[in-house]
Amino acid sequence: MSGVVAPFTDAILPIVAIAAVGYLLGRRTGLSVEPLNTVALTFFLPALVFHGIATTDLSGGTVVKLVGGVLAYTFVLMGIAYVGGRALDVPEALLPAIALSSAFPNSGFVGIPLTGFVFGEIGRTTATLFLTTQSVVLYTLGVYVVSSDGENAAMEAVREVFRLPLVYAVIAAAALRALGLVPPTDGTFMTTVDSVGSASIPLMLTVVGIQLAEVELGALRRTLLPAGLKLAVAPVVGAALALAVGFSDPRVSNIFVIECATPAAVTPLALIIAYGETPEEGLSAAEFTSTVIFVTTILSVVVLTALVVAVRNGWLF
Image 1 (cartoon, helix red, strand yellow):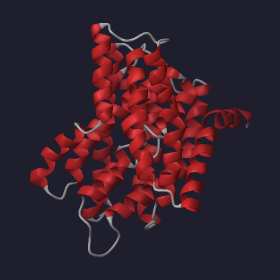
Image 2 (tube, helix red, strand yellow):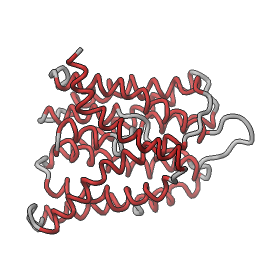
Image 3 (cartoon, one colour):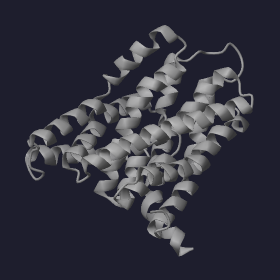
Image 4 (cartoon, rainbow, N blue to C red):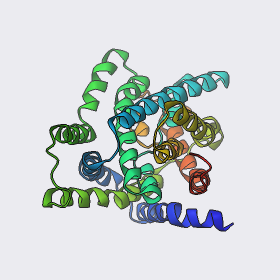
């Protein structure tokens, strides 16, 4: 029993506790999550990404493998979700929601803090690279999948990518590394960037809690497919891909699996609201996705605790 309690209290409990505070704030004060989310995504998180990539010890080969693994994971999960949705005769309007909520984990707002608690700096850096790759795919393929206007979807997807501060943070950090111009880590600039990036961890978890407080639950029964894929199938696919890709560092393999196993991301919900069709009656894709996010976030505590236990005992990689 102690083998489970320690990983839970060390890695999972801090996340749950901070998110719970955000949830209570959202419930009791009606605090709007949009301004905090904007600040997190446009200022704090890019600082974390910039510092992590600029100072990482990960090799170029590992980064390439990580990007390939994220792409493969996304396409495999989306494919399984579509096939499963068709087999279960899911309404056509809900198929994009099932695909996106199954294939896009909350690798940023949950994954970065979690892997940071478990693995330290390499956890945060690997998770930020996972998130950046996933974000580019989400704002391209994701926009196209949910768009109700196929003619304009491709151009809008490209525009969305170039609105992502994360992309520019990656480009800037990579350019400085390539040119050998990364400022000293103990200098004023990098120390400041590190401070801002570190502050993103509690901020992101607070945002998750407030987002959950705003969720409107629809039909819980219909979430069985995406919740099952996200909580049970995704970790298995992640482990298989980590083996197939062949990361040289077992820590990266473990981080990759944990990132894949995090709950459904919130960003697809925003895309579905912005670009999807709204039915005149019945459960909407937005309501469905909100329910999936809530269910997988709550139940992921069990899955992620089990994975942390497995990592601590050397049962994964």
